[in-house]
Image (cartoon, rainbow, N blue to C red):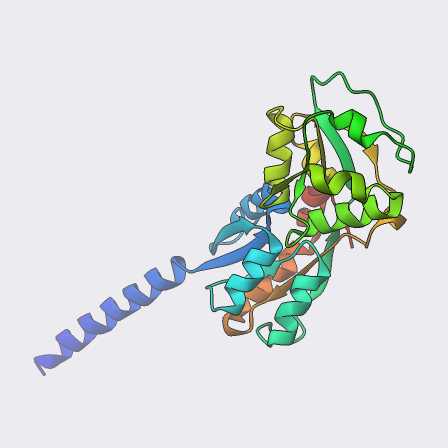
Length: 254
C-alpha cells in the first residue's frame, strides 16, 4: 500500500515529461536559399497557430539534397528545381505521396541600385562583354546551383554563353550572387525575381520564360521523418495564408 503513492507520483512525473517532449517538438525544413525571406515569414505565421517549432536550414538545393541523402535530420525538403528532388526520389528517401510542386519563379538580370547602367534589351547582339568591362557576371555556380543552371540555359539560348563563361563570378548559392551585386563587387548578376524584390538591386531585364527550363520549387517530406506533424506543416505550405506570403515575396504559386 505504501508503494501506491510512489506509483502515482511516478505516473504524474512521466506525464509531465511526455508533455514537455510534445511541447518541445520541432520540425526542420531544408530549403533552397532563394526561399529565405519568404519561408521565414511563412514559418512565423505557422507559429502563430501551431505549437510545433519549425527550424529552417538554407543552402543551395544540391548541397541540401546530398546532406539529406546522407542522413541529415530534415523533415521537409524544398528544392529550387526538379533535378535535386528527382535525385532524392530515386534514392528512395522521400515519403510516399508527399511530393508536390509548391512554387514558381522568374529569372532576371540585376545591377546595384545606384548603378548607372540602363535597362537592357536581351538579344544575341547585346554587348555583354562591354557591359562587364574588366569585372564579372555574378550567378550561382552552374555546376551545382539551380539558379546558375537556369542562367546558363538562358545565356546559351541567347548565344552569349561563350562570352559569359570566362567572366563568371560563381557563387555557392543565388543569395551569394545577389550579395556580390549589392556590394558592387560585380556590375551584373542573374538571380531570381523574388530575390531582386528584397535586395538593394535594380532589375535591368527579365529573361523570357522559354529561354530556360521552368523554375519550379517542389516540396516533399523525408521518409524517415514522415509524421502527422510533418503532414500538417506540408498542408500549411499550400494553405491560403502561406500562399499569400509567397506571392508577396514575388513567387508564383502552383
